[in-house]
Length: 402
View 1 (cartoon, rainbow, N blue to C red):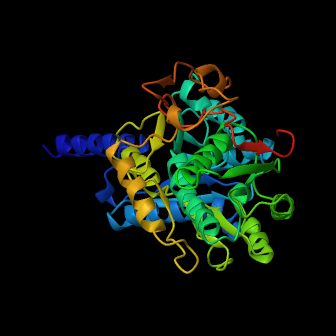
View 2 (view 1 turned 180 degrees about the horizontal axis):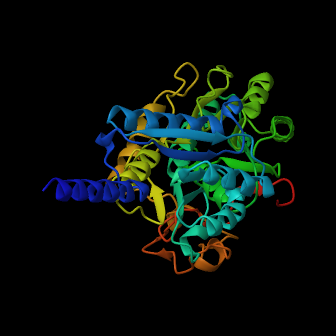
């Protein structure tokens, strides 16, 4: 009987070891930590893009630990969009990370190379789309409908410009916004178009000029672009770039500003109205928890306003136009109800005519199909990464595409 008991105990221990190795261990076992890798393009000092991602990850890890999950975070900071990215992913895999998140669009090709070499590790690319359609079952994509939050932020911008018009400070044709864009591809075009449409919903005469800098986070280039837009007559600056320099340039020039990723009213209190941002907490928490609990995660995930994944920071009421919060709240409620569509075809034209699937759908999107029906363009429904690239009338590009 003793021999049988020993044999059964050994067998039970072996089964437990195999189960834990496969990532299915219970949160309450107190066993070896599940290591999470994080490859980021900058570091927290950018006070923008990576800062926002880091906050989301830290909040998710804290919540998991509070629930008894044994997790350990390992981060590779200031990663360039080059072979260094592959090296950093491999190093994290070699160090025992079960999941590795990558936070930049340009990381995906290198991440996918590493994923082929480590089939037992989960690799997640944020803002990407290739992982959704590749033949690697261990790769994933995630992004959020940030164009919804940009639309709401655009309302704040439009309300301010309309106030300037109503008070006789500017003429209707002088209601010009400037936009510092990183690159001229779908993620940026979709977001800046949503911002413009939100502004025009409350300020009909508004137009927008865009300057592309060809990089995600270069404070010097972003400042120069913001100044070029201000010199071109822009009364308000917004951005899809990673640093706070456009906000600082706007404050120095005495124009208004709308930011991205983080509350920039702290660095530009007299200029910045608010910012739009993605809250990554829910995605990180859910993905990691599902993995530890032995549950599958979707290969492609899209966060929404309704689920709390996109949002705007607190409105700077010291400089915002009266009624701005109410106008934003109305739009937010409509997003929750599903009654507001950012790319409603009745609200914009392309080349003087209604937009078509052919001139709005990014030809490089991983998943193709008809996204233009029921009176609007269905952004981020076939893949999480944006694919709207329509050149909306009223938006002017000041420099060549990147």
